[in-house]
Image (tube, rainbow, N blue to C red; front, side):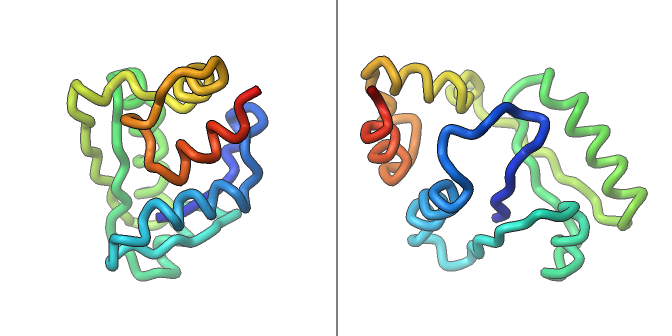
Length: 126
């Protein structure tokens, strides 16, 4: 699992170090997950760790177009394939901007995010 700052999105709500801590705390029970911070191309990291496939989750059809372009570019650059896994309908609406907005106004997002994230969202709410 890689942590990065996406320059295509606005300023993050949490600094990268805190996001990495949230991820690390959320996956401690998974022995086969390694968290790696990156500031390079995902294919460079994939080669570095010996990965032959990049796994991406898709929430909606709108995600597919940009993810497909990235997958094709990654394959061209490295030969590494991308596997897309669609989310179940029960989670398709979940987006970080919506989670943040609900939490900011005091809404309960505990069923939508891991506990380490929920704790920090509550602490950050006005």
